[in-house]
Length: 258
Ligand SMILES: NC(=O)c1ccc[n+]([C@@H]2O[C@H](COP(=O)([O-])OP(=O)(O)OC[C@H]3O[C@@H](n4cnc5c(N)ncnc54)[C@H](OP(=O)(O)O)[C@@H]3O)[C@@H](O)[C@H]2O)c1
Image (cartoon, rainbow, N blue to C red; front, side, top):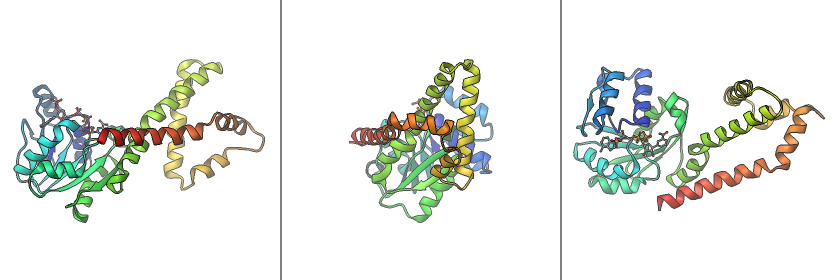
């Protein structure tokens, strides 16, 4: 399998696949920038790092969106039967058109926690991608996180939710740290408590089998401290702010894709 583009996302996928047990001899990375090739070769000495697209049946396209059409044409010309593109905003239709010959295309919207193997990605099939191609894409992205399937029309909503989502969480983290400082805690203490509150709460959400509403009710005693804090968040419209934030980001994604 060929990975085109050894940037942050390409290297994350490479590392994830190797960690998942994929033999280095199954993988090749094409990277145009010489110094970056040297870094990749040093970090992954068993994986061939080349300077241009080479023949491979399957290819992952992890280059900047503007470079995708040229790369799609090159991989199709080199004999690829299927590709997985992680480029934001580039449609399967435009990749199929750029390829110039029949090609199974799967498009994904990953997010940055993929860089530490904790990503959340959605994938959509192009017109010629079948079940087998989707399973292949799930295996590749599954090496760096969870993968769900959605119709391509839903990828703008995915971008607004999980693509931009890490930034929303980072904003919440900043605000909670400031709030801890205001309440009298030293900054490092507030930061440690905030980050591990987010981590621990996320683990309860993903591992515990309870819904967010159930988990919240379980820590909200009648007339207690948490109820007083939650009343302020509701009064300030935090819930509505998230509805508007995801809708605005999805709309912006739609605009950029046009
Ligand atoms: N980073 C993320 O978390 C994230 C999340 C969601 C989606 N994405 C999408 O994933 C894609 C890659 O993102 P990234 O963050 O990894 O970007 P990046 O760090 O800029 O990586 C792109 C890499 O591809 C190389 N490249 C460009 N054209 C090439 C070609 N023709 N052949 C071989 N290599 C080529 C680039 O080299 P040069 O620098 O020399 O051009 C660069 O190393 C983007 O389309 C982005 O929208 C990324």
